[in-house]
Length: 323
Image 1 (cartoon, rainbow, N blue to C red):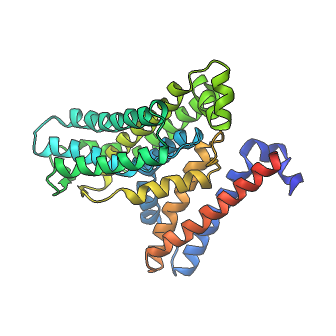
Image 2: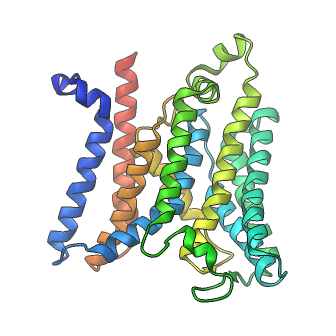
Image 3: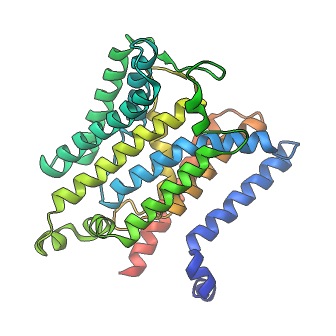
């Protein structure tokens, strides 16, 4: 095994990513075999439609986890952004382009709020994100009077935003996600922003003693997370017309699970954008495959939980070996 890991090609591609791709292929083959049919283009599109918005949530929360923190508010913030912007569009009559911008601004606002609470007020990220989650759920419910909102459907006058997801059969949503993923990967691995964020997760005190304002960079991680949640809302409503006031919690777990599967350390200091995207592909494939086999959706949570537990265990063992 050690000889395999030391192979130059394996080092370039990443051992963890190779394993994840192997798991992804194995799941596809297993679901195709036991469901009695090969998962076709419709199933694959269902997977990709989930990956579009979930990918943004995964990348966003990855920045926070890289600092050693956590954000349980990303799903409700995404819903809140979709509800507020949708209400202003449908009831308020504001232009669609402005409403899409408002969706991003709602996410940005929550990101700033979380950043201030964690970095400057020194609240535990667990507590601050739980507070933000409840605030987001409350604002979304108040904005629509607990009725939810329906964004314009395909064929209506204001349906052009749906082309952000799919344009004449081209998965534009996936193209947007991959573009943002490349940019975020460069930020994390090739820029001062990423270097400070990862170093905060590795050894916050050492970074502070070196003269770096850790509060600024830690807050920035939450701001990036919130902004990407606002963008995720746009991609979410591009697939799901109806947005309810009670929801979003499950997306937190899936995004965090994808990060852990992809090699992002819950202790902070280590993050992998490409690994996180493969992780969310696995979770999306689990959902589609379990539906194809006509099993209860609850099995997705069980299997995802097992995979996450194994991934965290592997991360702990890897950290112990590095010491």
